[in-house]
Image (cartoon, helix red, strand yellow):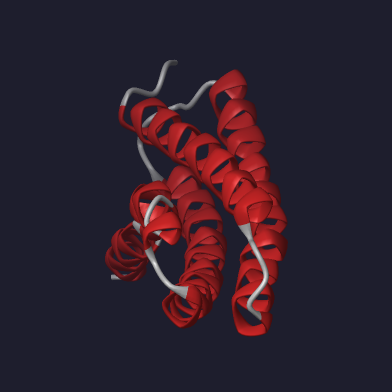
Length: 143
């Protein structure tokens, strides 16, 4: 019963982490928007980033439980690689929040936010690549 609940929470966490899959595409829209719209998009992305980080924590906790209860023997190297990717995603999603907030502030003040938009796009693409690598590794564990 507890295993089923944790599996459900793990799937819900994966859906919450979906923000990382759309972040590069949303960040690409900044250049097409006016100042007020940039501020709104930045605010939404900050909120989405918080949800994604919360989902990342859910994934880590429920995944640890599922690994401990599963009948598969996971290689230590597999677990280390997954943890490193989790930490990298967590760090980069925290780092990208700063430039997103600066985009909102610049849009509010009517300043150019191009340098911040470039940083957000770069970090969001890296996060997406790490997210996809993590999904592939998690669905193809080695023993």
